[in-house]
Amino acid sequence: MNFKGWYEVDEQNKQGLNLYCKAQLKKMGFKPKKDAIPETHKVFFNFTWKEYEFYKLEDTVEIRKRSKIIIRDITPENLCESLYVINKSAKKSRDSKRHNYFNKNYSIVKKCKTRQNELYTLKNETIEKMINDGILALKGYHIQHINEPAYLLYYVYKNYGFHVLEKKELIDVDRIKYLGDIETIISAEPTRKTDIKYTEAVALLKKYVS
Image (tube, rainbow, N blue to C red; front, top):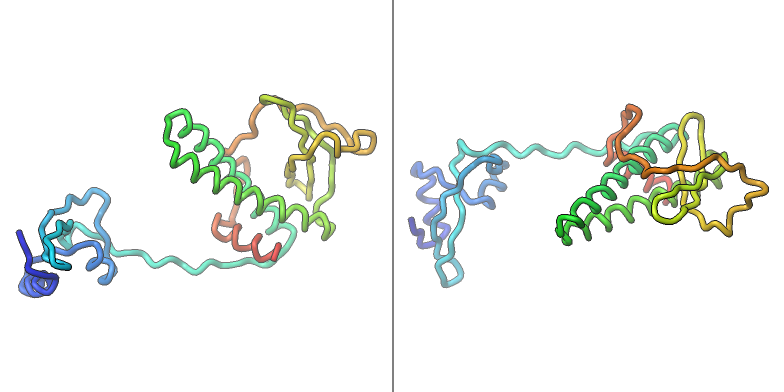
């Protein structure tokens, strides 16, 4: 089917055609279902014929409006839970990066690496401020053995604990307690229930460090 312009698409839809492109659907508050099969038709636009994908209304769903992010009170408990959430999320990006690297999906690898680095930067900035504010206390350090030994300072608040990578020469082994070796990669799987969602966690921590 060919349309002389978008005005003709609109006119025919008023007469019951029932075919809409994604841009039209979005204005109406709808989007195609995941399994929707589009119809391809030509529209004369900008002095040339172009192909566009069209969908019937029965093959669409209403676009849900994003709920407003609730930023909770800045308390030690909320900060620690938020840190836990983004830390696990960063590790998921780490694992996804590794998986896609072996599958040669290098564009995805780049995105995962960027996301991982951004989250770890936020984590480190938050931990630094929490130390300065007297919230986190240094319990000791671990040595992680994966490829080369990595020295990880271990900070705690009640039953929360977080590692921070540190250079070996900057660790005062006579003063800081050695907590043992870690022989595996720390898992991305959560080991505790959390009430704070990822977007809430990021918003809270950014507010705190700013």
